[in-house]
Image 1 (cartoon, rainbow, N blue to C red):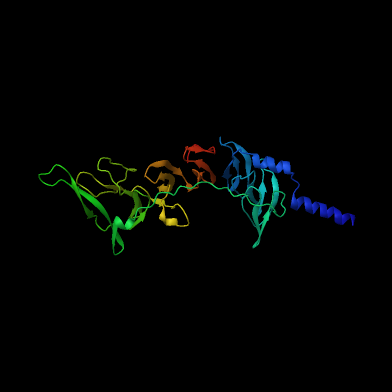
Image 2: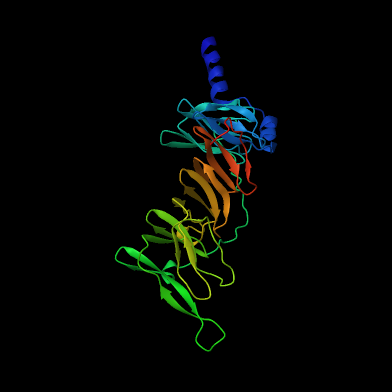
Length: 319
């Protein structure tokens, strides 16, 4: 009986945890921000200055939320604290972030809710609710392009000055059917593909404001009247991710998009402004102005592209 009680105590310590309510409260109140970083395929965390806080030792990690981050080791998921120690050792096949009280974990297909002590969650879940402003609606591409066979043409305004008059007038015209694809991009731009290159065409063009993207040898000008609607095929690849609002995914515009020129990735706004010049091997945009980037081969970190601030330090003098 003595040995049974001993093993029972060990089982409780390993699987239920021994964190106190005070320590749980301290975890939740920790507002310091750490950013995931990886080297040679293993993940750890840096602070805002790019200094290493938790060495790269995990297979994958999430951002810290309510004091804990999901971490994977040897094929199993658990939860770590901001000192890098395990609060709940890796034992689950899948694990979600903690909300204020609990987290959802899986063993096989079996789902359960656990609390900070790795026990069954009996508390209610606190849901963070914030205001939501609908994003800009996409333009209707069918109003600005037409298709014949497998090729597209752009419909544009042609400006001309009638003989004997002093004010320009406009009429609708179309380009040649030379484009491989046309997709909605934002309220003001279409994305246009030609010969495996991508450009942004400004549909709400002001005849008093000529706006150019990155220069390219492949340029098409539509209008030789009072203005020139110019399309620069500047990109080798453009990833368009539409804003999901009220489950109507493709109804609303992008906010920012990743683009590639040659072998490097950057970020462009919905208004065709280059926010981040192409200099990363890989790039994936997340919300709140963050992007995960591969800044050196095999090394990844996070970038706040709204502030143009990197949360990592390069080990080399080249890309």
